Amino acid sequence: MYAVIRVGTSQERVTEGQLVRVDKRVEENGAVIEFEPVLLVDGDSVLAGPALKGAKVTGTIVGVESGPKIRALTYKAKSIQRRRWGHRQWYTTVRIDSITGQATKATKAAKAAAPIEV
Image (cartoon, rainbow, N blue to C red; front, side, top):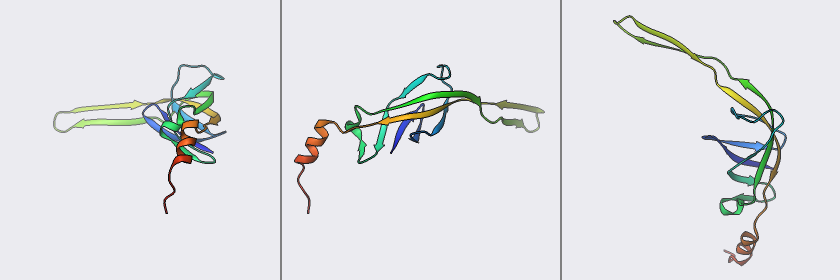
């Protein structure tokens, strides 16, 4: 079973027990967090759209770490203008504990009432 969640401005495909690096969060180690919105859940059947109103993805914060150092240099020719700078992004590592997603009654009724195409 896997789910697609929105984390900040990106989307992540996660499974239970997986470690995911997300942008730094303010919660402490061991805190339980829920990811919303859940965009897709694939288990016995694939759920997306309005059927995901009750879907949840929960995880536990494992730790905070910094990513690789990014170094850059700006340079303008003929003006003796040079600048070297660097950046190091902070990440929070989260272990995905559970993915819950069940079809709502309206979705099940809509599937049952749908005509069969031949």
